[in-house]
Image (cartoon, rainbow over the protein chains, first blue to last red):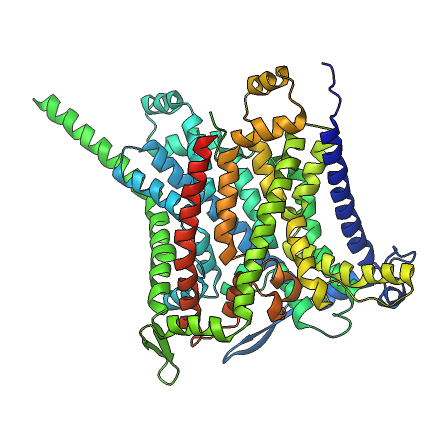
Length: 293
Length: 307
């Protein structure tokens, strides 16, 4: 196939995008190299990569990267990096699974039993919730969770995440509509019940989508520090730990820029590795709203 | 007769099993929706009309006092009108600069032009690396490396872009744009890939160039997706934090506040006594946001019909 020549317009876009990519490389490179710089060198050389890289910032953080949590009536606790990693896995791992599971199962029910009145209600609820902006329900959410005794617990946050509303409900609905009905019908004829058909025939056919949505949620929640900060204050995640170190420990060596950047790298590196492995899934062809006919 | 009853009984059992299966799928998520959406939002409305008695640790009905207080504060606390102004500036900037750039970048990726796959990764990178990490690296870079660059070239001491009051808001605004292309580009380019080749080929046979193809074919074809982003962005006026919490924690300057930042930072530090006022603030914002957003959506849908 003959390769087309790029138009002048495309060259202009190329130049803008190249500048964009360069700025991103520059920023990440600067951040990564500065994380390996001693503070004494950083005072005089704030721009160029160091010729004497050191891992001292990282070893210091592995030892000192803790969050002090004060619980009224109980005292203060030191939450170290290990516990923060565990909290992150519990929050992001379980939370993103539940956040994917809820739209996955509800979309199946709504698609399969589309004639049920309640299915139509659920579909409408999703659309209305997407359109109607609700601002500032944080205080009420805190109060409701406190009333239910699940505030500041993983269970509370997991229940909050077991939510079928949003774009992925529609994505799953579209996926189920593409799954051949003949396969399910053949399973029924062979004596399979509804659960067996769903778990053994239909779910494997949407497993790629399930995994992609799970990955997207996992990355979001791994990086999220705001939701745990608000609803899970006694169980800081790694992202919460970075926020705490930068904004609550304003004294040296925690306030040294290379230490703070090393802290950022600790949070970023696992997710970058995940991105390198699963980039095609994470950046797959997603569309919404469709093309006009 | 017996056979009829048996068949009828089997059908009833099958229906019952289907219903049980249906309930087992939608039951828990529906309960979750009732608690975490319906009750939370109704409670938010109720809380807006209450106050907290700290002596007895109970909430009591307080009428419209919190709502009145929200309006009073808008006229007495200068940071609130500033927050509205900043939120509107942020949305306008995103609408007028961010969305057009995202569409142009998406077009480049959709046409699979030179190194488009690589650019897609770079545009998506801020969505992968934590917003906190990206914002912090950006902050340390603009406050450390850029002043040293300036000193190297001018010989004069310089302050960081995020430290100087006159450059701070502009820098945050630039960052919000710079780091905000990822999802939009994925969605636009994904939707563009659904455009029929025959439509594009017909345009090319008519002799249109790339720019004309983008403006006269691609943009009208993906207009529903553009509409979605405009509407979502509009409702975001009331919740967008403009990365201020990542840049400054709870210590952002009042002059740079946005409505979203105010709501979130106040909620993180709120005790039981502050919750009713914050709920009232959220309610007032929703009362503005909901009709305006629905109106904008209606207007854009009407506009879309004309294409």
